[in-house]
Image 1: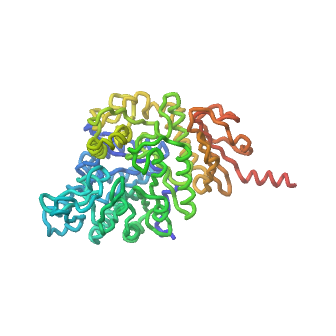
Image 2 (image 1 turned 45 degrees about the horizontal axis):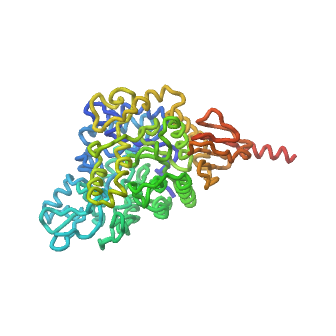
Image 3 (image 1 turned 180 degrees about the vertical axis):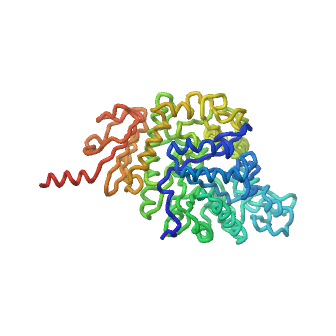
Length: 569
């Protein structure tokens, strides 16, 4: 059972993810900030947003844009101050918007006081806060062959000693040693600090990596060696239960896990309500349909049948244990969905974005919108590695250049899969810097700001933005979107994504085209009693579903029962 303070509010809201350095610059330094976020809260309220997921704003040297934390109880100065953060919490709550922060506790920054002490003194009390092991051959080689997720070795030597520290990401992001109870106590204290300030929960960054197999054995895997020894490690569930028991259970908060490289069976364990570990988890299986082995650089062509199969698998699996899904198609680590799951051809750009939105938004779970997704922002047309700021793509570029094989397999996809594609400044209007700032931003503004921006979208009744508003209203109005049973129809149809949601009162039917060609309306003879709630096409032909057309139908089961009784009489 849920603790009495928990209301499960996360099941009734739509989340909006804010990547702060790219959202809105209030002080003219080219970097987004907290006051910029505050200035746009009314926009989010008008959109229908009920909760914000805020990417890291903690004090950080910003080697990985805030996912390298130097002080968990302070704010990076270009973003603002603790007073600004308290004001943001207050202003969100004034508008009935929850605020969820990123929790990054698999690793810290190498500028954190703990790490500085740990590597400067072998006898430091913080030495065991990190994973430090003796190298091989008198320190000439790392302790094992594990790879960093950002390319290269996962180990960095400490000076000229024979010891190395582990970093599953950049060398500036040393991994914490969760085997140490003092580390776990530090994390609990951090959580309670922020929840006492009014934070409504945490999106837990790479949380499934915090437990490592203590044997630290070599790995013979072809891709990302070491992962089988730290993804969903042996004590992961014990650690998450501990966080719930010592922190979360005393507050009405939500927890959302990033299940990096996780399988569906593992996710079920994490979000099973009886286990009290996480409320929700991001399952990336559907966003990995255009690559091999979950490696985004190993490109393969998008297939709708694969996409809807992965989404349906999650729907069925989590429903079987009364668990809750996260629904998303973009975030700060994923390139834009336009041209990826839909088309970015100008002829169909708007219709495709609406169809894609319809396809995922009305599934069972909590929808997430990433900043700019609601106006159809697109990837940048980067042509040189010099255009990129992201540490991941810069490191991978160096790794790929050193191998002819990797260069052939992955080289041409590095740029179009880079995280920077999702991190370009928010396009508020068509001014020189897109209304994001009055000075040159930290990352290039997309030139298509002239046709894709919030100001024009608000004034266009047929815009993607206004379509999202309609979807959000439908989600809030009809209980069937919250509690209706999911059923996938026509799983092998390679043009249409069709499913129903059904509860005791209603049946909702969703049809979304992913094709630039007309498709046969396979539901033609099954629409009796249905009312058309929403469509992105003015025609809605009975026989044909037009390119990238979407329709949402609703049928009242109460009326069906009444009609049946009349017929029986």
